Image (cartoon, rainbow, N blue to C red; front, top):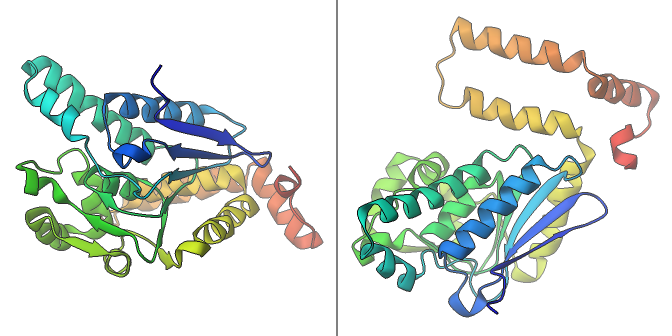
Length: 263
């Protein structure tokens, strides 16, 4: 029986960790891993007991992108099957990008191609100082198509025009400069740095975090019009009239922890 390509654990705080577990293949994507990731993101996104999700990996690499044997198989498939398979990858990335819960990637090693896409789809990304990155598809005569929208949103079109076209590798420091990752830490400190971010998630109102994430998606890249201003006004009016905001304000005034920090 083939081993599962990932593991999922959820702790008592409601923090779920999805760990890529194809270390012998450098956690490269194939159809099984893509389906397992999509199922995990769909399930965790809809589970009210989950407060946050961490995406991590076992082994030397975070993810080497597409499994070459899988790509070769798809290249020889009929058009309908080829498109269906590509859409499965695109749907998995969308599920991660649009997951309502906060997400964080812990990048301990190489992230190539689709691995960069996973990082770009997470809300926060931390990298070990020895991690490396590449949009290496062109080196194989391919393009970073399904990950493209998320990577361009993370690093900008100008940087994408370099790294999409050259396939060059770059280090963690450059990934931070580009905006792909938020922090770079020594490998031994990666887990602790992740816990610091998780603590910040858990100190915040669960619904407020969901709404704040939705707000970013709603306003990013949009012109500041009367319509957008009205939308933001309605959002804050709705949120501050809710039970969670009332509890947060009352807790602040009473100098006590809000109820969600006792769960």
